[in-house]
Amino acid sequence: MRLVIAGGATGGHLFPGIALAEAMRERDRDAKITFMGADRGIETTIIPALGYDLITFPIGGIAGVGMARSLSRAATMILAVSRAVAMLRRLTPDLVVGVGGYASVPGVLAAAVWRIPRCILEQNVIPGKANRFLARFVPRIYLGFPTDRSVFPQEKTTVTGNPIRSQALTGEARVKAPGGGITLLILGGSQGASQLNDLALKTVPGLMRRIAGLKVIHQTGPAHEASVKQHYEREGVDVEVVPFIGNMGAYYARADLVLSRSGAMSVSELAASGLPAIFIPYPHATERHQRANGRWLESQGGAILMEAEEVTPEMLRDLIEHLLAAPNALSRMAEASRRAGTRNSARRIIEEEMRRLGVIREGEKAEEREEEGARGRGGEESDG
Picture 1 (cartoon, rainbow, N blue to C red):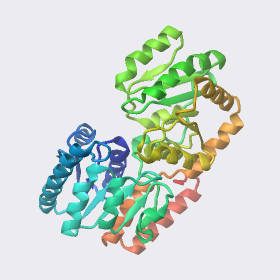
Picture 2 (picture 1 turned 135 degrees about the vertical axis):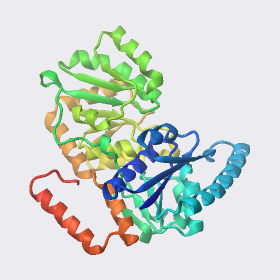
Picture 3 (picture 1 turned 90 degrees about the vertical axis):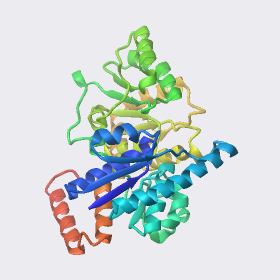
Picture 4 (picture 1 turned 180 degrees about the vertical axis):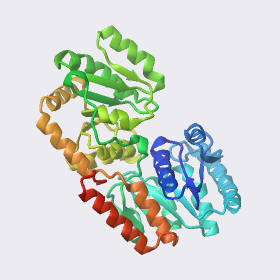
């Protein structure tokens, strides 16, 4: 099986692609997997380290950059599509999957030129512009959340949940803080969310003085690590400060409550891990899609959303203190989050595409589902 995964630039687009690659390798150890992305995206460091082939193009996003730069980037995008057409002719993939964002455009359009089987993933509640454009060129669209299907042709869409990397999934056992305390995990994002970090710095010291045994883990982003550490040291509080978390599942397993932005993958990972969350969405995200993502889990009962423009350190401190003092309410949120989450989306998507390609027969797929159901009835954790 030869698979091309097109897209990247940000973790929100790249990580679902990695989850699909993992699912494909589980199904076919000899699968040839190639990523196509942007030459300045995070894929340039992550994908080679994982051992996958990578092809990059000198492209950038067009939205919100001004007329002159938009025209220049449109020209480079056309050249990238032309190059991707030539690349796919050489690679002859069986399937091309677009994982969203501008970096997915060359690969998906090139697949349409060659009539190679193809599909796209939409991670957010509010679909991105690249996927709205690409929707007309693909026969199948997999949705991370139940979104407004009027954006896409309904006959093309399937809600599967977002594919999640194995390292971002928790195991069966929670890891409790020493002495039976409770743990607050603060996720500042891989690049560091300045406003969220600043808000945490003004909130955490007071919280730790008021709540005995509270353990705080603060992921800052590399650029903010030193200043955040220095602040907590000056305040005299012991906070575990980490610049970047690779093995997210291990940290999710330690957490009782999470404070985070509400990017699509953060919301999906927290739900899959059955974690209650407080979301403060990035207010300048395109079409406020982070707000929509967070509102979705809030509507399921698994999260509380606070608007970035309105929240104060005092409001945040009072909310966290209230939740941590009400273990039953926190448990209900955790259970609601778990019910809303999905853990097997990558496998579902790969199996569906392989079935469409004729690699998996309907009978084989039905037999696998029956076996999974039997294992679940035997007491293993459900994939949700």
